[in-house]
Amino acid sequence: MPKLYTSTLSPAAAPRATDGKEPDLGAMPEWDLTALYAAQDAPEVAADIARARADAQRIKSAYQGRLTTLAADGAKLAEAVKAYEALSDLIGRLGSYAGLLYAANTADPVRAKFYGDIQEHITGITTDLVFFELEMNQIPPAVLATALHAPQLAPYTPWFDDLTKEKPYQLEEKLEQVFHEKSTTSRASWNRLFNETMTGLRFDVAGEPGPLALEPTLNLLSNPSAGRRKAAAEAIAKVLKDNERLFTLITNTLAKDKEISDRWRGFKDVADSRHLANRVEREVVDALVAAVHDAYPRTAHRYYALKAKWMGMDKLAHWDRNAPLPEKPERVMTWADAERTVLGAYAGFAPEMSAIAKRFFDSRWIDAPVREGKSPGAFSHPTVPSAHPFILLNYQGKARDVMTLAHELGHGVHQVLAAPRGPLLAPTPLTLAETASVFGEMLTFKALLAETADPRERKALIAGKVEDMINTVVRQIAFYTFERRVHETRRSGELTSEQLGEIWMDVQRQSLGPAIDLKPGYETFWAYIPHFIHSPFYVYAYAFGDCLVNSLYGLYQEAHPDFVGKYFDMLKAGGSKHHSELLAPFGLDARDPAFWQKGLSVLEGMIDELERM
Image 1 (tube, one colour):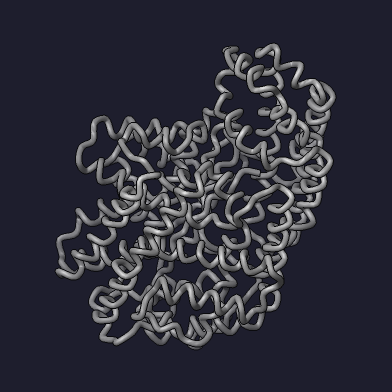
Image 2 (tube, one colour; image 1 turned 90 degrees about the vertical axis):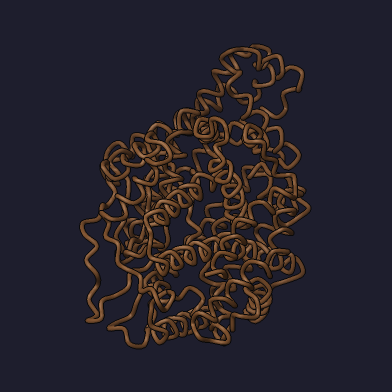
């Protein structure tokens, strides 16, 4: 199933009116999934399951044990690859529909069952295809090189290059089938347990009329009222503490599951499998992490000390970290405001980008409102090239929500532009998948800043952007550091809830700095971060994307030759090129330590400007 691309921004929140009523955000879209299927009981669903099963069996019957021989004729090998690709699109359509339907209401048992059933069907169908990529990697390099000269096969060269990188970590076919089939009852089931548990949690926040779900409770952490922020943090701490045994078990089980898989496959470092999936070298990630760690005092530590001063405090309690500035109450932005702002910012960069983004609004490719049972956070799901992406939001009217919309639309535009590459080459490694999303945020931020004349509003905008960048770079690298320590420690035995809390607190103190007072209860906050469960070590991709975008945006401002054309070419490439190839036209190299410092200097420069204010 294609990945769900999730936003790293803090869940957005709208300030509530003083009379306790929710603000009027205007009409908001709910997505129309009929581009995939009319309904979960539509006859096309059953027909496509049957067709996928038959196609998988046909591919197995026609090609198993024959691919090495077939490689003597590039055109015939291309027929096999194209059949495999077509089936990938069909299976992806089924999985995408079930996943989106489930995300829209994870509390609905009918949808949950449908999602589980589809996952089981897909696992069963794709078990017949385990041989395919394994046998492709058995083709002698010289034979494959000759076959790739065939015009029908040549476009798939990047796919074969990626397959070759997987070869040292592949197992023999029977073992691969066992790993594949048991995924439904192992990692996938623990992921589902986490999702449904988190969706079902309710938080009794002092002063609120009734129990709240996670999303609106997190939203209160950026409420103008210090009392409401504290009450929300205490409610989160209590509920997570009450459920920490379960979250500890899930974390231990998934970490052990990963360790078993890594050990069998021969991965040495706990994050090596993620680096391979991201098509990025370990030394590149290590350079990024080292640069961000080194910049902690110049970024997060310095900013939070400045914010504490603005707030009239010696230190900020952890629930005050995302508090709005006292002199600038944040206005509510309706859905129409958000659409106008983001589309305008995109149009200022490239009319084509805005036109693509507008289709998401006009065609109901967005599910925006908060609903009971809806998955928290935000994502843009690419689905499959034969359809189009869908965006999930929980829009509640803050400027940060508008930035989340800009972020996810960046993903969506990227996914639309890459789709012509097809199911095998359109998916983009995470390190580059976050580029378009963060670039969309930057365009929107700059557009809002250009419209702002009031010094207080300008200060608030810059401070908000700094906080988002800290959340995207510093916080995500701290998350990555936490994950590394958890997975490394887990190799020696299970971790207790207390150990997880101690690692969390140690990492957070280092990253946030002495101006943040981590109050009792914060030691449980690791438990609600979904990336730790769904995609181990995903989080560094956000920092990668943010630093990369800072460098790219600097070139754009400097009128780099044909910047817009090169940028669109990068997005259209999807997963068909390595990051070094995609950055070369801009004169950028992620292997150069100066590259990361250049990206971090943008954040430092914004904090410099705030200090001057």
